[in-house]
Amino acid sequence: MYRAKVYGVAGFERQFAVKRFHPELVALPVVAQRLSAAARVYGSLEHPRIARLHEYGVAGGEVFTATELVPGLDVMRLIGGTHGVGDPLPPGAAIIVLAQVARAVGYAHGRGVNHLGLCPTNVIVTPDGDVKITDFGVMAQTLTIRPSHDDRLVQRMPYLAPEQLVGEAPSAATDVFALGALGHELVTGERAFVGLSQLDVEHAILSGHVRDAGLPKPMARVLARCFARSPFERFPDARAMADAIDAALRVAPVVGGRRELAALVKDAVARLDAMNEGQLSGAMSLALPRPPTAATTLRMGSVAGSSRTTDAVTTIRDSGTIRGVPPSAPPVAPRP
Image (cartoon, rainbow, N blue to C red):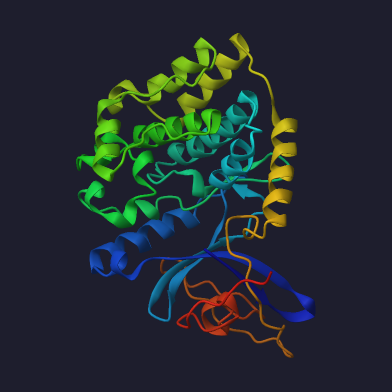
């Protein structure tokens, strides 16, 4: 993940989170076509809890996406910055995150769009306690037939549903499984499915055994249903899951809420900032070039084949603002 800045007239600036795809993952034309189609769909989503996709294209021979740069921490860093220092998320704060994610994914499900790649690194929590989701439908296009045999997918394995592991057709219920895994990790600070190898993780997922998260029974039943081996036994979509979360909280409230969540995010950000562990959204903090002396109007690369243009800005691809150097150049160290 990289941070990029676009400059324009009258001091206009806009920052983006840029993600490059491993060349081997997008080498096949069919994968590139699926990515383009997924980006087109992602770009059509408009929801306050979904990070907007602004750009999809090729720079220096590498496929990239550029989304809005969201302040805060992704869930992976949030968990590491709270549980890791003995200050875990209150169950209520964890459920607030899960409920917001479920509502946002439920919006997409209502439009016939599945994420199919939910994991802690594409869920960002802001210092106000709000949530933003990225990578809708994009990461799923890079899955191989047997994910457990692909070392490049090691970080995504614990959040894949059984049907994704055995090559069956995914659905909205596939996202529900990932939401359950995300919720378990938010509450406990530990992954729902672990193993010494990817095959061990696959076996754990297919067995369906998950350690109790210590939640009240109504909420525990919600998570348990998410982990059903058959997608037909889970919630049909994230909207139904979000409704079940709301109902469970009415029956048995849990300690903590949005205020506590916001405070924890701010504290975790301060700790990670002090340790110089990276940019808030999970992107690296990298040197940016000086603003251009005269604004230039350039055509932005199309998002999945669109023909839109943006006036008076230099693009990520053409201005070489990724890391402040041309995209094909070797990495440079972030500023201390």
